[in-house]
Image (cartoon, rainbow, N blue to C red; front, side):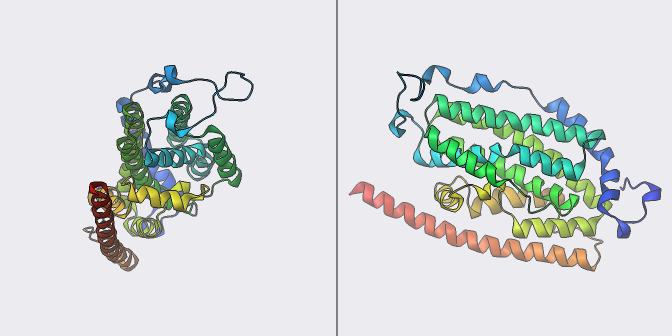
Length: 324
């Protein structure tokens, strides 16, 4: 069923401006649904404040940081820093989506609500990291300054449809990354905190995924091309973090986020929900984009299989060394 207002014309003449207008009804509906199911929570309730103590500086009793002071694992520490620094760029993310979606009507209400909810994530993660002494506070601040001073520019800012398609996958990827970081952290307090954050990210994914489904109903060819572009060129928003490639490699080996997880737990669930590879009635450009998505997934699955083999071999070597 289409919700196209008669005066907006046929799908062949859709523009970003027309789609933005036509989708506002869906945004309002999804916003109402989100507000009914989202649960407010207090960041300070997830932080082990009793573990905190002064750092050197203005306090004469300040204690120099050392990794032995925290129960967080090495891979947990790496992933926590990457995840927090990604959350730190919220002002830039807000600017990007507010520019694309606008600040008025249901779109604007959602932009501000999303920003407010995302703000909790950076707050609680930083408070946890400092109170539990999970990371070097000086390096964390140096990384934050370097990362935010570079600013952030989305790969998908050239169209509203590209942005919707991107966040439908990225919010799920972020949820998976947070959840797996908690599992690998070695600290039940950290796991509980990141599970709470992941719940928010999942609700955000559902919002954008449902919006993307409505876009397919309105403009299937344009939406398919946007999904193709995002899927093929996807990268996480924290790619500009200092040392990101090295950290990403460690997170892949540590099974926080890797090719197999990206293929199985991020791309496939969203694509299946939207029936992207089953959609009929597409024009030539839409069909071509659909075929390219399928071809890319096949190639990615093959790459993930090779990664799985290397990871299994690495685990076997480590197990053998442990026995010796």
